[in-house]
Image (spheres, rainbow, N blue to C red):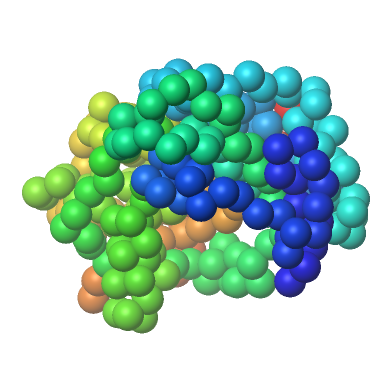
Length: 285
Ligand SMILES: Cc1ncc(COP(=O)(O)O)c(C=O)c1O
């Protein structure tokens, strides 16, 4: 695929967009990323994603200066040059600490590398939303779980393990506690309220998770942020997974156990519909 990408202020065909072999993102995974979705040419919740990116940069000391309006224009231009204005699309922003010839601890303040790619949504997303996802438990965890770091080897191997076992997601655990998926946050429901692990358990503060909680509060649905056990997940009535690209996908089977009836629950459907209406109302918070 030779589409147009953004790299350090330039719009280039992807085969011409190259980063240095000394880039710390390549050498050490020293950087952060954001994935978000556009709806008919408009990036959704860009402000929230940039806020999380900037907080992550502050946490690990990457001196990133971002101009939201400029980035919005860059994304728009990318969507346009790739013929993705009339449809929904995947957007990824990658920031690394940049080129540095020093050692493990950065030698000097380098200029961050900033890249943006856009592409069509994965064809399976609709199927996941309609039919649901099967998942397995994973025994490992991510490091620095609160930031969206480029160091996601546990997520990569976790997703590979999930695919090997003919499922679509792996759920990180800490002993008997469940945390989050390799690319998703998790919610369970008893048909009256929703429950999700707290960020303090060591999960990514997902933007979609936050918006789902906002929807629940607005709809006067009880939200509980509390640690969840494997048993609670296996025996709950409904469960769903969230991320910016997939939005809300029902979780219908965990290992060998169906969740509820194994069908998409009414509560999950309700959240899916409410979320679908959101992007039209609230493009950039
Ligand atoms: C580990 C992990 N948890 C949760 C999420 C969901 O985050 P968001 O809703 O901001 O896309 C992601 C998204 O990629 C993720 O990688």
